[in-house]
Amino acid sequence: VLVTQTPSSLPVSLGDQASISCKSSKSLVHNNGITYLAWFLQKPGQLPQSLIHTVSNRFSGVPDRFSGSGSVSDFTLKISRVEPEDLGVYYCLQYVHYPYTFGAGTKLELK
Amino acid sequence: QVQLKESGPGLVQPSQTLSLTCTVSGFSLTSNSVHWVRQPPGKGLEWVGAIWSGGSTDYNSALKSRLSISRDTSKSQVFLKMNSLQTEDTAIYFCTRLIGYWGQGVMVTVSS
Image (cartoon, rainbow over all chains, first blue to last red; front, side, top):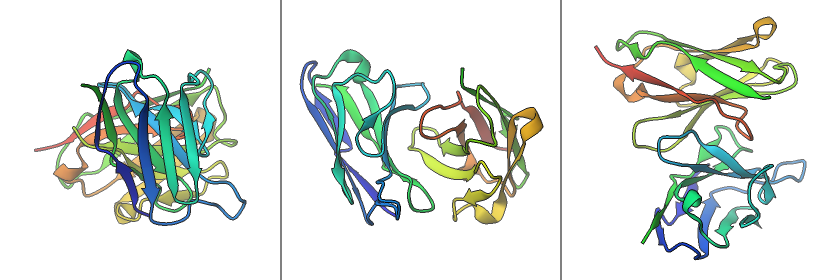
């Protein structure tokens, strides 16, 4: 399954809203009705950290300025007001079809 | 407290076999899956494979012929073995619950 993430680079100012798109070549809806799409943030030199699973559910401790939305094959991650600790590379992951596949990443950086 | 920690050689010669160990704590391997994900220097993330709570495995089809994932539940360890290594296999290898917890990763360089 091809996962296409756009844009590849997203220059922002602190306090801006940021939006990242993730589109898959197949539906990510499992037979059980659950949609398996997750978002991760990788800061420079660090391991990926989990932000959102099953499209829109934030992991414990993830600020509510992060929100995930979408359905079937078209998904979006929004950051309502970008803060300095949000800078890094964002990846989406589909985990319903084998092999699981990540998007190529979106680098969120300061203008 | 959930933790995953990778260990293994930092340098492997071309055509040789890579052996990595992931030691976990804070959760049971018989109740949770563990995945391997790798990241070549300066590039994105690639799912390598997984071992499920019941012990079955799934692999990235691009690596399947060279890859084996196994575990020792008594030691809370998961193992990755990949043979016929090439320079393109140079990467940071992470073990992870995938959705939730990640290890720090281990850098593996394939070079003579």
